[in-house]
Image (cartoon, rainbow, N blue to C red; front, top):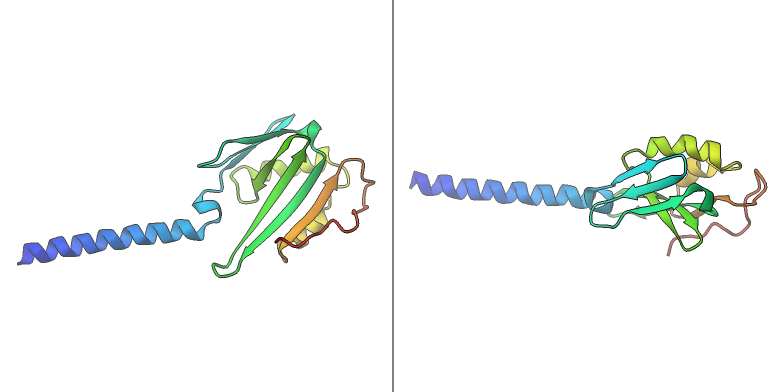
Length: 149
């Protein structure tokens, strides 16, 4: 009888541990795996599990967007930086490994980058233009902020 109880207890403990691990993964942005961003002198590459790598050449970027998503019931706010280029682009979650290496590149390569919008960005859900090619420094495009649908 004691052996049966031990087996039942062990099976229940393993089932609870499995459910707890799945719940923790579900509570994380992008299924618990934010990925990794790599920045070189001429390219941004973002690699995430279960998705093909995305990359964009720095010279090809025409617009940088901040997309903020708020999943209220889980209390998770996700911030994504979208680097748009003709024919493609690259999306980078702000919690990706190596994201801090991206900040100095933004400062050096994209004059007029809107840091105030980055600071304020997490406060609301939607999309904000942070930089656009041939946009005068300090001038934000009108009507470019749009709530996420």
